[in-house]
Length: 308
Image (cartoon, rainbow, N blue to C red; front, top):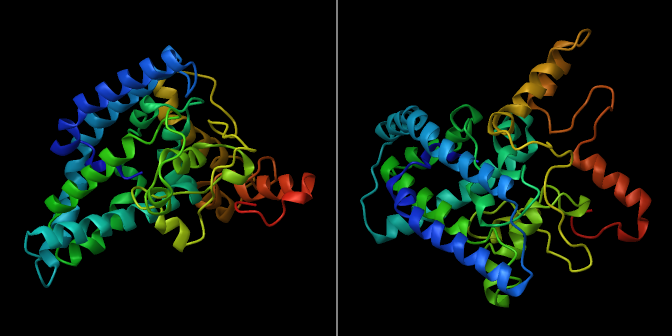
């Protein structure tokens, strides 16, 4: 996820709002006895990861901002600041977010940064705060260059991205089951995003949207949540630790170990860095595609269903 703009004022101003919602969720879960679960160490790790991400990416984001500003200066036409350009930029940012998010799941280098957000085995509002500390080196910023080359100022882009992140906070919850049908059809919701965080075979690599779920429906990555297949959260192989440093760096360590094995060709070493997560030269691990294939082999009655 392109967290290099996380330190923008709009997201910082929203922090009290996040705290209020987290407290409200905890109260609702305890009163109702359903709607998710909080584990103190897990929640603390998520909050700590969020604080670290805001500080680190707030600093390193200067480099990303400079790159976007340079691209903007090269733009042949500069867009004026008005409601139309704001709305247009917001849609373009969300469209770009979809493709960045998809890249983060389909390329191991991007996944090494984004995996942090998926490392919790619980799904609650603190999970939204569990963000990467390595946003700068993920490469996500390059996806935004076309927007600035179109003449949209980086400050406007940053504002729209901040609004995008704020919207994404509320749907990291199990307290809300389904929204009205018309809303579910267009917007990203708790139900849609629970699918994205699940490690069930049918749900892997689905629902990349930030605000508008229509992108997933347009590009074939939408999978609806099923009552018969309740989401299970966490990674395919969970970390088993709450150590923030390990949470932040474990996939990079894995890349170094895998790519540094003896006897590999240059292509194999590069594949360990840039191929889809789970790729292995000797089939010692499985990618999401292989996991889905194995599931269908065991359960042929589900062949052809969305996500499988």
